[in-house]
Image (cartoon, rainbow, N blue to C red; front, side, top):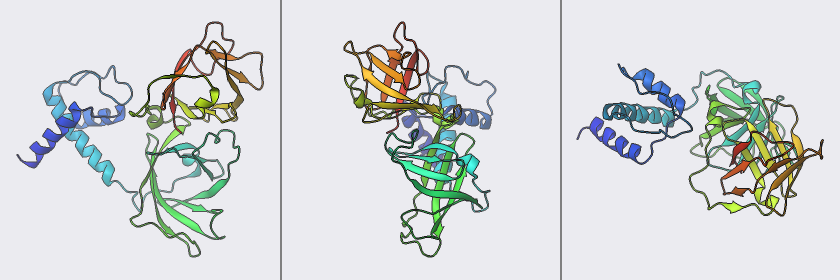
Length: 310
């Protein structure tokens, strides 16, 4: 078996186990393949292919997917790439494979948190301030470092809203040495909405659905699937709701559970008009809500899926 045959064989096995590609991946692969007849693009949602395709199409897509994945793994921010601007960074980013979220303000201030406080800013502190630099950005004024310490980051941001960055150096005076080898960080912008953020799906590892009997069970940061809207619920059953691309300030209020199991969100600015959802169940990774009949208000649509970020 030659190298190409081996890769096709391994790729086909991966496909059978659930090969995941985004819609953008599929579009790129189709453009690269010289097909006279292309598979229909309808019924593509999230990150999973639905339905079967012809064997030859599968082979072509697998080869393309393997090449695409190899390219992504090998990708490092090129030294000659343009600076990453504060406008490009502004928003909330999810650190891959973690509970951490980074929020960049319009002024370059960066706040890091793995708790549900980035919308309200409660008990948060600025971790550092960024300014553009060739090939990435510079993070300076880290409260934990002496004055004058700056970290140099090489970074690129894709049109889909994925940032890949690594520390490449630091100024004299910093007390924390660079790790060896230098870690490549991957971030997805979740708010304002990006293509990659909208494609976020619940983690595969989950728990059995449970009834929400106490609002603090929902403590965390939740992303409304397919959007840039974030919902945070804290340990005191306070909530905040915001899409950073649509509003300047979050809606805030309190969450309560009625004896009949319905979940009620009462906004601070209009306690008479609440958003009420029928008996709600949740897992460790997702929350599905159905608006109750006669509800005066609502958080989003009448039927929503929220994905836990932390």
